[in-house]
Image (cartoon, rainbow, N blue to C red; front, side):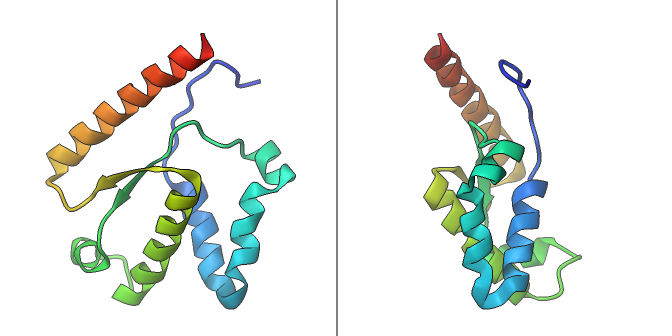
Amino acid sequence: MFRNRLIVSDRIFYDSIIDQAVNLGERKNLLLDCLDSFWMKVFFPKPDIVIYIDCPEDIAFSRKNDTPDIEYLTERRRLYITLADKYGWIKIDGTLPLDEVAVKIKNTFYNQLSILKCQKL
């Protein structure tokens, strides 16, 4: 249905998974392992490109006004890094100035998109 179409999405899917994994506590790996399940892949196909903007918790906390405490960010960052490493997500340094982050995202996206186009030819 979505073959040969470009779909751009924000972090909502992975953010929801990670948020629920944190809520599960010791059983969080049960949920994270479900990302590899047949049904998850059917309903939520694996993206060709995932760009993860990583930022240390203390810096992220200083930039946000909707986060209860730094521990909230610590566990979530750990899980994001785990998924990024497991699935080969592209990491961008979120401590860079915003304009540099934007350029890196754009360049990374266009580079990866051209690689994907060549692979599908």
